[in-house]
Length: 253
Length: 313
Image (tube, rainbow over all chains, first blue to last red; front, side, top):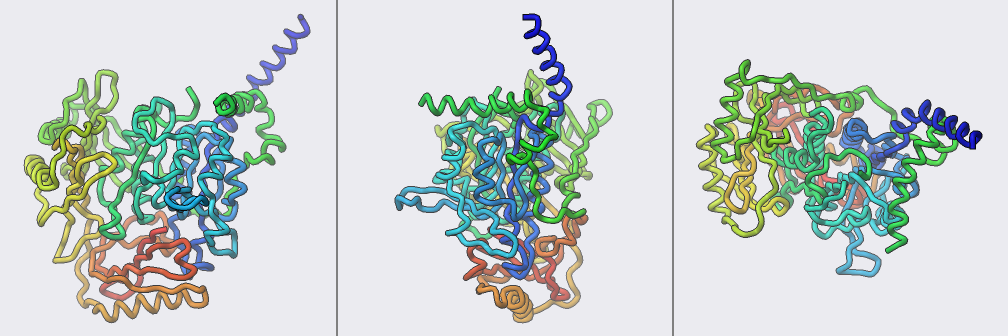
């Protein structure tokens, strides 16, 4: 018994000595993924800089919200296999890439939303090769919960999107669980996504002790105006589902 | 069901286990198991500026800044926002948005914001928004009623946008978004507007005014045919040998903000004043259309250079 107590004390000492670091670095992982190789001069003749800008913004702000470590990748590390093998461990997931609500393998009218992985250095995107379907994500999440999911793509905030369900987030605005999903309902300029997400993070992380809720930050960002739109059929429409009283900090309690 | 529950508890367990096994934080095994940060692109100083941008604020007190608080109260009342149990003020330097403003929030009895108003350095209303949830579906105003409600409230708030409003339904929060796009010298100022969100019961949810500084008009203006040549030349150069095609959908003269969309060296640069430009909306086809739905190019109306643009991925 005494030996057991001594062992327990030793373990607790070891944990307390290393626990702070461990908690900060391992406890609540967030992944930010951004497809940049599809948008390089190799594929397009010019380098689209928005993927890098959005990635830089997200990694810094997700960390400020308390997620740690921040994983994921900008560019070639954003592969389907890397995304799917890591997603189970995440509490927050962000993806900036091409996204849409595609017909499921079973055919219309069933939808199986998808995002495109980065095609890899020297390659350009191909839907058939690069799609990461929501059904595949749902399988990889194994029913576990997510605090914050942001799909910085076109269309995955629309009512037909199956992406929230891949993360066990119901399409309700009255959840009481600690979860929140953000997406865009229409075709959206990258500049509008950057403006919106900058305002969202600015408001959310702009007060001490995480006093503000994601709903407030979303509402603020949606209200500031100035969003350019590609055409009149695609007004700027960010959308959310989840808990309107949740402040976005990681954890299940 | 039980299987889902079991697995749903696995992540919290993993988080706790990670703490207990925290000694592995700096060791190899967990890093190799996928906990590493993988940034494939070369880090650059300019994009790191975005990552390092911060929001700093200075507390404003009603006794020291009575004009700010008086403005906020007047705007709140004009908009019909509820009065809070208390108010707080701050001067914000928002590095994420390159913006600076005074902000006053009405707070509930627990100190949570229920609405806010923001003002620029000249004391003009920039943003006002209330944070309570949208009303139910019991009452639905028409677009005409929403436009009139928006116009009335702007008048009471001292904002008088010119021109005719556009109203579009807001399926996310309900009601209508009523926009007055800004024009200057007969040309649209891209993104600048006064906008009001009217809830479906007719109450005002938010007001925003976006207005940027404009450069002077160019002394000599590029004609549309010449601007089209610039666009074609640019896309021919970009898409040559890449299996991509394009079609110019439309071109208009607009005031635009030069940006870093196609020029990495300009990421994080101080925003420049708006310039008059030919805005070309181009629809890609072939390989480029796998990831891009639209490319918008800004061609300076004075010197014909490409000064930025945008993409729809």
